[in-house]
Image (cartoon, rainbow, N blue to C red; front, side, top):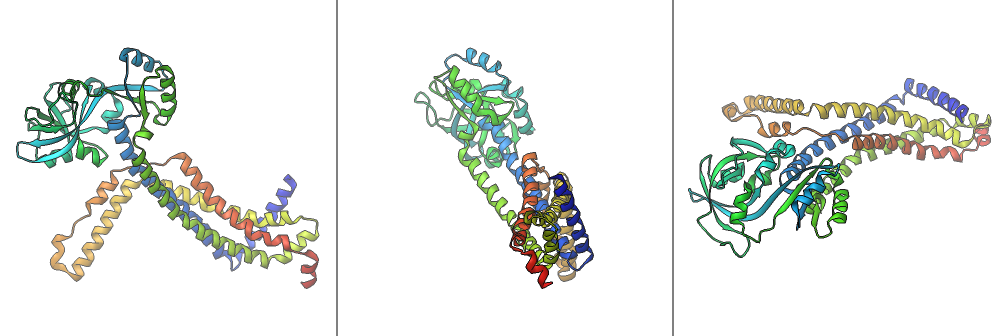
Length: 427
């Protein structure tokens, strides 16, 4: 096998050198360039898409849904003690949830989700503090009448630090009034997260306020964080075995529709980009079929010296393999370089677009120069880092390599039909 590979590699190398020196060098170069562009584009697009999606997912998992949600705990101390003995357990936070219609002293109103949380647990939660950014005031829920609002919700209500808000209507158990003007809170802080829906709808109060206003029948929930959020199903299985009466669910189940939509969006974009590889593979296939036809005399000579058809086919497959390998390596390196410097690239694009717009406006409509400005959305995109996952990167690389290899394999099947005696007789 090793001897066969040595002479196959030798013949392939010689043919490749002849091709580079001949008129067909441009075809090989364009094929390699196509593979490189496809791998680069797919790496960059997937990195940017992962950055956008993971900014949403991180905010949701760390702030609202947690990795695992637990209800109907009979003995909190026993359950928490068991959790702390699990190697993948990170933290636990008690909370209540309710829906409310919030109003400000200015007469503005907005629907909101009000969450009553264990303030001390939230302060010690590393993931919570990472995603929960206070942009005004403080994250202070020590007082029962303190509240912290999302920045979009605060803007809708027209409130600032120190303003009063009233929970006019609120869902809850039967022992709490649906409508009341006595649920008055003071805004102590305004926060911002990476997910706009949280900024628009969420507010936080302390645990005692929830116990007071949500009613005695309000369901107390426990949000659990794990060292690896993808291991939620294993944790749930162990918890159910230990505590059969628990009502427990993971983040995948709780956010099924949202994460399903994100997955569909990502897969559709992936399929669209993969069309690049289809075009490149067709180009390699046509070029390789022409090469096989032009080299049928050399192939016949190899067959007459005792080479098997599969060995001669391997000569052409090896050429396609190295074309794909070079293109995939170049594309992967360029894609990773762009992904890791996405912030600078978006800022450069912003400057280029601004100066181009300024230049053409100065030529064709100089009276409107004062209205030319940079697109602020590029600054928003620059703040979202691209995230490159090793598994996806390897799969993209292998796909670029396999596209070229498969095209060469199917193109080289024409060798299997060669009759060495007939070809040499014609020559």
